[in-house]
Length: 125
Image 1 (cartoon, rainbow, N blue to C red):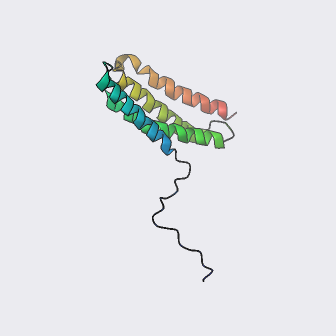
Image 2 (tube, helix red, strand yellow):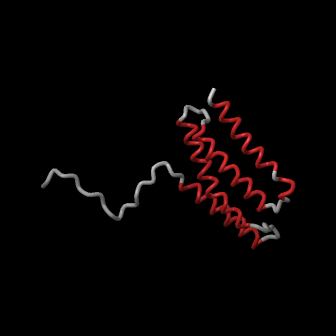
Image 3 (tube, rainbow, N blue to C red):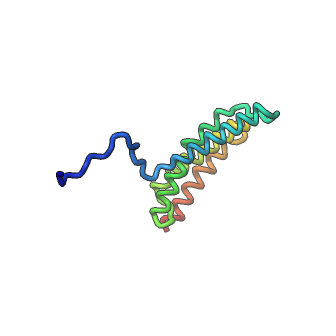
């Protein structure tokens, strides 16, 4: 017997750390529910594909939350980018899912970016 450490088994999946794989699963289940509802009832989403925008949005929001939590529950510049990016993707998904008029909802982007900047200013005090 040798005292050297044994190599890790190659058939083990790599450890992903804090990446929330379950969020992608939730989004896929939600997409399946919407599609099933559309097939079984009169419920209809014209742009159902926009549900898939929620996958990167959830990942971005999770990253912002993780940074916020590690920074002693304060927002900073590192958490602002993923937060704003995630909220913009959620807003885009809502616009496409409910077929909203871009001419009426575009100020929502200003609100999201301005809110993110305000949170950072509040968190740095």
